[in-house]
Length: 250
Picture 1 (tube, rainbow, N blue to C red):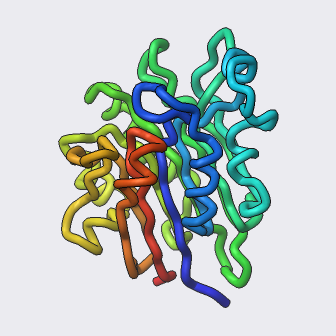
Picture 2: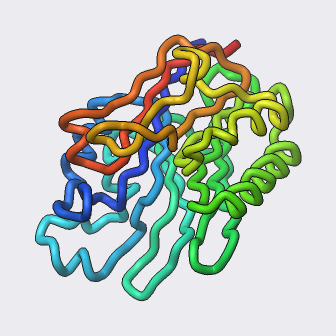
């Protein structure tokens, strides 16, 4: 039984570089494949976009999450959050392990900023209990984020038994680092960069990360390593840096 798990989280900016200058889906796929994580949490993933499909000659025919999963991640789930005339986007989880159950919960604070919690249960070979993975992308305003954190707490308290392994990852937009104390007290989770380096990672902007926006919280794991993937080629792919962590079941 392998108790080591490698996970990553990345806001992919809908497959475009800073200020939407370049379509970078092919570079993004190469980077994710090289990262070689077991489970990947992605935010701002396009499910479909008719305008981009017409505008870019090498735009993938498959949805972005399926194109990025390719032959590396056998299972994937997508939670559609924002819907508009030309398409929709949301969160996605790519997994080497079977996703046996998943649900996307609408946690939008208002109709102008659509947000969701993508909750997947994974069947990891040799593990007695399922691995719960929750992918989040919280709102830009503190009042809405506070409501969304309460919804996250309520969902996990209701659906995830305390002894089941748990990972919560994504873009928290929490530049004041207020979520760490709340989630630690409410859910007994720990942030992997706090455990490994003493504080959450700086992940935005990817060219010179200053703000601690992206996080990986865990319960039931020991953290072996945690790193920020920034600088080239990552800084040419998205305005966020990717985060990666290697953990062992506690």
